[in-house]
Image (cartoon, rainbow, N blue to C red; front, side, top):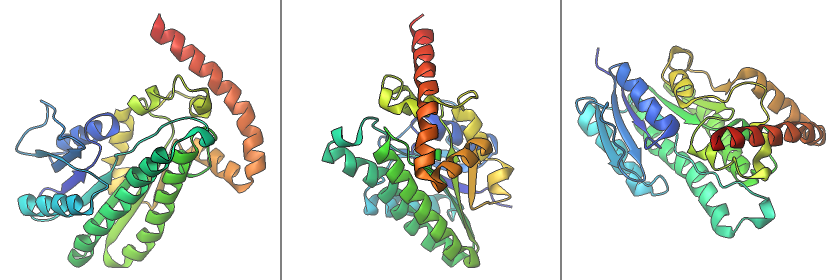
Length: 270
């Protein structure tokens, strides 16, 4: 049986880098991409090829999918991990930030899914896996642009998943809580992002998320959607059912988040 071949975006760090390493441990082929070609001495050249990919460029997507097919015969999985987040009050965000969030987090992933899914549909099998966020389940004050882009990504891919299922192509949207990445670090100094730190459990690590993305819960069960952790996902959905109630609860959670931010800042400065 041939080894599966995947394309991973956002492989320059965080979840993406950890995911490439997890797939390598499984002995799989990977085209690891980011804005600049990522590298890691632990990635064997026999399994991993690195390339620069601008996820907002349709032509770049066509090249990347073609490259996977040329080198390994077909694309089995597409992992959308690349993303941007600029925390802050909605009215203070510049128009450039609006475009940035929507182009990278939403438009880029939808274009990439179209290009890959056409190949997968013709072949009769394949799997698109996208890292969204619990912010896609319920709007997060202080992260309005990020919430909007990830909610759009979730909605678009869930609908596409139902369309593609009869053709043997699966779509899975994974919505994790806060993950210890550079994206989380940039929120640490922003009071507007306090809700990100309001969980009552430890922040997820990139390796924890990567093990789920490359593990049987995603690759064998192929669920349409997965929340990490499930309990926080349920809370987010309850908040979304009644937004005013959710925002009222959010006030309590925000105070917890502010305290957590202060604690983390003190730990890092000590």
